[in-house]
Length: 88
Image (cartoon, rainbow, N blue to C red; front, side):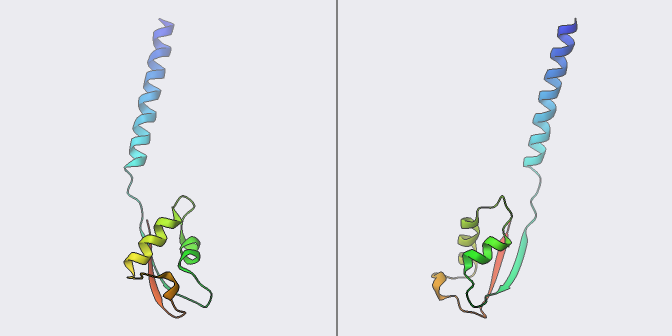
């Protein structure tokens, strides 16, 4: 009987952990939108790296930023140019 109780506790723990993990995956993520004015020496990559969360893929943020701002060549960005950066 003792073995059945232990097995029941283990099964309950596994199901609880699975439900918790599923709930965490479905949690809506906050989206942060930044308006940034490029300064002398700034690059899109460096600015995105400053704003990204540690778990974010900086290359994806750079790609999205270029696309959202209609920038086809990151070398053409000038000081004073305002860009929008979205971090999800």
